[in-house]
Length: 266
Length: 251
Image (cartoon, rainbow over all chains, first blue to last red; front, side):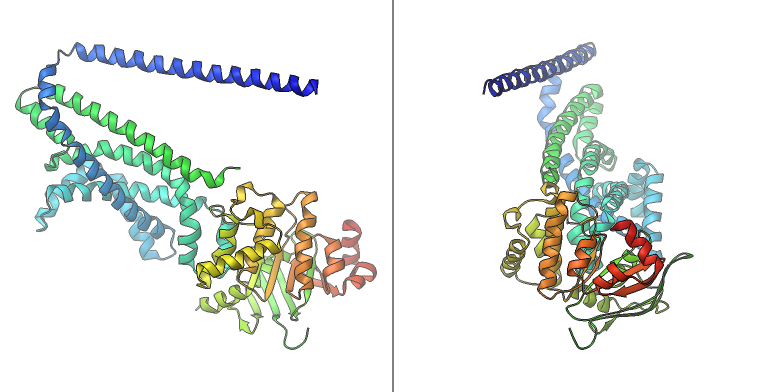
């Protein structure tokens, strides 16, 4: 009995020390962030910003946020659909599907997003197809990101073991059922973290569609900035908003990942 | 154990590229019969078993399961509906369990009935619970495979195969991936199945199981059935020197 008491005391002491260490590490981390933020603030202070001007245009700028988020959410959703179709095409034995999928990913990944934006913005009207600014922006972003997401989904599908497929087939499932019920749900866990990264990248790449005249964050920032010769103020302001959005969505992303990992915890 | 054989295999060959893995195998399995295939690794046992539900495509020969011929060899137009008909009648248990990692034990068991047989959910759940109880794992119904022991995983895998109410069960080295102390629980479930009259084809290294539960033991070597007979004959009076040599190593 004496031994048991002793062991419990040691265990308590050890866990106390570990908790104290973890807390100290967190404080150090926070201090580093505060220090770096201060340094950045000092740098910006030397730019002699007109803060009154920034505050005055804040509401105008912030009205771009829902458009930035909206364009990004719709585009990532369409990109997922495109990516899934392209990934299945690449994995299929059908030479036409395979050829279309590889051509698509090769062309899109081989050319700059800005060029693709202009192709849609300036090229499509030449063919008599005139889209509004927002649909054009969504088309450019989703076609571009679909090609990258196709590779992510392909890797996710390939990460599901052969044994899972064989077990499902031997129950009598069709290939479609195996894909839908067994492979894709398991691929999802592998696919979500990188797709989350793609979404966060897209939040900022959506700035490129400002050249099409979509009234999102960057468009508003450059418009006001140019008009009053205060471009840097407005761009830094927009950058701060992008950063805030990124932190917000990164937090959401890690929550989703945690939920998906639950089934695999021992 | 009478009437037409439920499995008929004639002249089965399998090539992997130039490697000749099955060299003209013939087999008839009667309803309710328990056939155990033994032999060293690489003899072609698993490949043969996997040809019975078309996880491997035979290179030549015929396989007829429960009256349904499986496509083979040169036949270009593959009869997928026939393949699926056979797979629905044949349960398979794998060495590595292959439980669906994203599903609980119960979800694993009811997946076949729900998706393949189109059974209503409440009916499938009742069936699944009955089968989990049969393999002694009803208390694990909501647990994911990652939290089950190897023996428990394999018992869930057996329940999953049984949920399709198969006429034949194939076991591909079901205990080879298990820690020694967990083998017994899986073999017990298999013995129960055999006693209930299930037709079974079992590839295993468990000679004790072969001796007790098999009606017929087949010794396989280098892609051929070398010798077959009732267990007492194979284990005590094998005729072929290759069989005797193998048995002196494993017994």
